[in-house]
Image 1 (cartoon, one colour):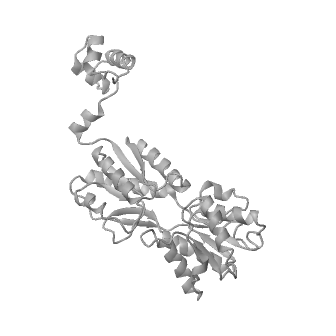
Image 2: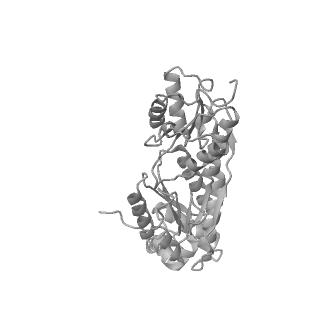
Image 3: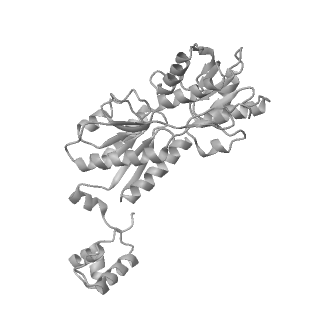
Length: 339
């Protein structure tokens, strides 16, 4: 049996005031004298009273909650982003409901439907696939405020995100500029996935007259440090071996660093390694890791600002807008010549 819900009437019975007076006092109304407000608030605390937000939402048509869908809560960059979003929303008076798709489209759809049933005021979504968004577009057409944390200019949806293609281009270009021409790459080869980093990598190679070598483009079949360790071992069995590796995230890159340590491969003398995201561990790896910075604070601020604009717009949403943030290249010892 559930615990009894404390009502305004219970506080009124305890204090001897009317329910209207109790309601005003709990809302800090100046119409109620300060001693009376304090007495009623103290009684409410003793009874463990909590405001009925469901009832409030029926009146205001707001629940003051935002749904956040991530692909993988174990991804350090996404964990950092989730924390930043929760803090920023709390400062604006909103609570955050979390869900993880675990990189499965069916789970993403389920999470979105759950948030809709909870009548959240808006959603922030990191989609499993940048290409499969047909389940999200109807939300916008129905005037549900939604902002993606990755996106394409022609998606028809609002998005605020780091420009993955540009970041991958910068990472690969850096390796070329320090003298490398046989550059390996770790990322998913799934055509329905998120190909922007692969596109940036190949663009940098093409501009420098370097041919793409499929044998040193390895699908790690995951995004973890363990998968990076496995992918590095697979790649280093190819002859001739690559002299540099670009990993699609820092966890993969740290796994590659670990493989090199285990097999007496010197970084960066024998092989240079660069990652993507600039997670905390990157700077403190055995060989500090060069990377592309995922500006979680900037993404958070701009995405929430846009979501608040959509919520305020009501039933007349403005035209969708995609904001791509140009990421910063961070050079550390893992690619620096003479380290």
